[in-house]
Image (tube, rainbow, N blue to C red; front, side, top):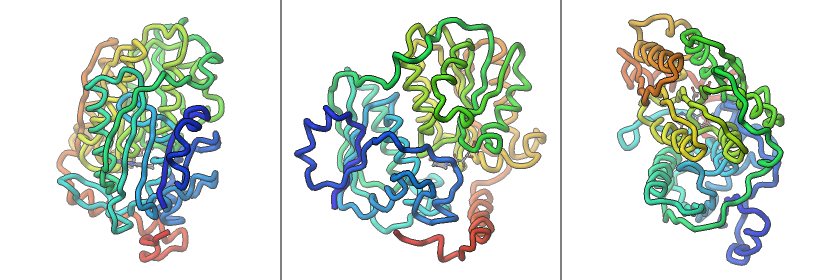
Length: 383
Ligand SMILES: Cc1cc2nc3c(=O)[nH]c(=O)nc-3n(C[C@H](O)[C@H](O)[C@H](O)COP(=O)(O)O)c2cc1C
């Protein structure tokens, strides 16, 4: 079986469908839900997403395919929100357990094969720099998902219409307010929320903390609220080496907004792996989006070992493993208060080695699996 994952609209698909006549196809039927960050695909129903919306089995399809082609609109150096959503929902392809792969922390493989994948990015007037960004991103994804890149191609296309752009509120009238948007679907339980709460305490002036998860299905309303602020801080988890699809969807819509107004955008991104440097592509994407929208990119804080940093009392111990993160939040907080550009800050754990973190993380999966009635061997299931 050959597998095509695409985000083409009906007309675009008609033009090329004959080429893919016998292929299994994953396309946007409007029903896909964002990943909720529950790790059910590792500790509840290993290898398959627990959200039943018709996209839960894509990881198994990818594994079975003898060849995969991904066709995506180019979005800020990576995939469109739909394609990203499909990848976010497919992390069951790998195991929860960590190992060092090509010098970085990654997941152990669930399946023996490397996925043979061809990528086709479609966009208007893509520059050499855009193409290089996409190559870097796809390389990171394939290191993570154990993909074997067959090719990375770029196609010129007319700018595809963004859904509902016309129905969105114009983003012009705004106050000197800062909105801190927690973009994790874990809502109040998210690590992102904890980091934003600390940051919020360091920002002077009017500010508001909002959970994106409270606005699912009401994105236009959220975009209207975001439009009222002159400074936005996006707090988010790193998902498959990039921006989680639920935020990407909002960003795509904001790009289509009339009268965007002047804004400065900051980001706080955290991750499961140890090396904060793996967040570089994500911060680059936020910067590229700002450039497209005419916003100022104020910089980002990349937090390595985020599942540990968001846990317990660490954030109150400046001399502990979270020391770099605490300094980073302070620096970013000052920049936001003064509406300054901070540049990107990378915060790794201090005095807590990668080996120690990996051992703790690998140990943490079994208690979660046991709660769901699973034994260790169940976590290695193949679909
Ligand atoms: C779908 C999905 C994809 C993920 N991809 C990555 C990744 O590429 N690299 C990484 O270091 N962590 C990855 N993680 C781990 C999260 O970044 C990590 O658990 C983070 O602390 C969650 O933050 P939150 O509580 O704010 O959602 C992923 C988690 C999920 C659920």
